[in-house]
Amino acid sequence: MGLEEIRKELDTIDREIVQLFQKRMDLSIEVAKDKAKTGKAVFDGKREEEKLNSISDMVGDPLLKTPARELFRGLMTLSRRRQLQYLSEIGHKSDFSFREVGELSFSGKKLAAQGVKWSYSYLAGRVFFQEDSIEFVEHFQDVLEAVQSGKADYGILPMDNSTYGMVQDNYDLLSRYEELSVLKEINYPVSHCLCSAGDYRTEEIRKVYSHPQALAQCREFFKEYPFMEKIADLNTAIAAKKLAETKEEYAAVLCSRPAAEYYGLRILQDGVSSKENTTRFFLIGKEKIYTKDADKLTMILWAANQAGSLYHVLGDFTWNGLSLSMIQSRPVGDKAFSYLFFVDVSGNLSEPEMENALSALKEEGVQFRILGNYLPCKVKNS
Ligand SMILES: O=C(O)C(=O)C[C@]1(C(=O)O)C=C[C@@H](O)C=C1
Image (cartoon, rainbow, N blue to C red; front, top):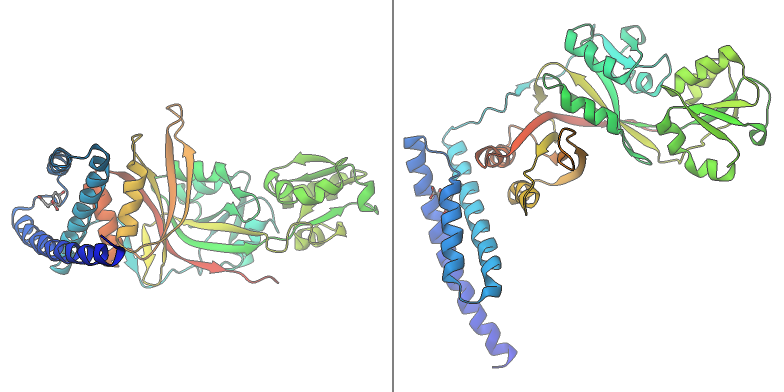
């Protein structure tokens, strides 16, 4: 048989497959109608497992058993997706404990930020809050404690940096505060300058103080000056404030330009970090709310430690046409080499696609927590 002939036969088979596929999907609606009456869950794991086993028994070629299982798992996922779509069309809503609100209001509200004035948390917080509504705390955890206890209405935390990656401690912290949620993402351009208390040239500096993230974001700079000792501090602006007080000789800090100016330091070099260096901050609140224009959702997933579980979980998003922009893992802690996943997905909780994807996860018994559904905000370089 030549290629032309083979293709003709493939076309005939595909036509039959499409007809059967349509027939199967029509039956899915009938199943959904029945389940709407009886209240049975869309997902029936036992039935799916039995079906997959009988499919692999039916397939003669051992090499085709696993692909056939995959094909039918896909078909049943589509069937569930169609059923959930139908159920949401007839008014069945899932409760994800988040409420849609008109808009977020920050006026007259207090924001907790780590550090001191002109820290990057302060600068990012200033995008939405007046100077006198920002209260400083010492550690990142204190930010979450302040929101949890009601001492502050909101809190701000750096989560990721475009040069150095995730702020692991803050992801770990956020996973532990179940009552809190993410209300906004602020992408703030971060440009560090090297500054000292005295009149030095860059090559005379022997010690550089800053937050470990800032020191890491300037690693290209340190390659040129390997003799400089890098010393971690709680915050870039705290380091600047301390140096202004101690006036330590041949020492410098990496901090924002406004921090250097405010604490009266001398700028030896500006733009030490890369031009594109941007930090992603989360604005944290206590209410589980989202706005109509929210188009990004962050969640934590606990995927079972078995073959393909993460693949199937993520499949629920792709099957619903939702794109994943980030996935990062963190150790769970109490069990060696057990991980949870932070996932960013495009979409809004009130859209059927999102509702369907999350309902599918819920029905499949996947453990997850929505951290927030928000509209990201990008601050331009000043
Ligand atoms: O049999 C059912 O209960 C269905 O909903 C149908 C179906 C399928 O497409 O075969 C889909 C979802 C269930 O998890 C199991 C099977």
